[in-house]
Image: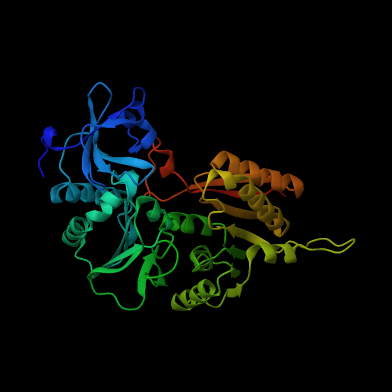
Length: 404
């Protein structure tokens, strides 16, 4: 592909719309575009200029999406094998610098790695690819080829079942793109082994963004009674058990997830202190804190972990989400012993850390509990945050100690 400016369709922006792009945000919405100098096919590589014809960058065009252009580079370069190879090598270098011992991690985190619309996760010798943008999806062969060269993986799997693909005019696509994959894969997180079916389940198989937080939260578990709420396949609970918790109760609405957590506990030799229950966490907390006249709730946990799925996918649902967050924290705090720790997380981009903490403190006020913040959590360094792109920061968490 040539980089001659005459060969690329040009997207001209309206006056005042260039600053975000210059600052580094890669998304250009339809409302920001003045005109195209020539027709561009959906998925085409285009150049972007401001209304004065100054080059801002190049990227993928898609008329079907609200995001008409995803800028991938500030200079005029081709979307060829060398481009993808260079971007992937740079992303891998970041992980090797920050997570040198990890065998499971996010290789590419879309906008955070200047590859908008592409996610790649590594589980040992298996890679999982997600393409949420049309231009990126059309170039899967280039991406897969570069990944094969860099990692020599046993298999590369496609998990393109995200609802967001429909906004790009894309359907679902799942299957093996390269190599062979049969049965479950064993992924190692902080020295613990997790059996995971990469062809099904949440995200690409596991919540890799919590890898460092699993270890940090477990520091509060030694000798205590632990509740792992929304446990999924047991990430927090198994780390707590290894850290010396006296007892860990795993709780999740999904019977399949609870069964997987139980298998993982056995596989790591940690079954003895663990118990498992499939139940709706809201209903369970409500039942455990229900009292009759003149009765009081008897706190029994020294560490409670709340790591629910996102309660909101859009801003309109935020008020309902905040009510949900307040409810589970109100109930959980009633079950926490004095001196105990509540480790809690929110993975919704639409609820920022300030609002999330305000909800927790409101719950503590209603429960007549005084909290001491002892830790703040973020997504792992393999999920980089670029402050100029607020969408790259979504996971936030806190540990609060219940003041005696």
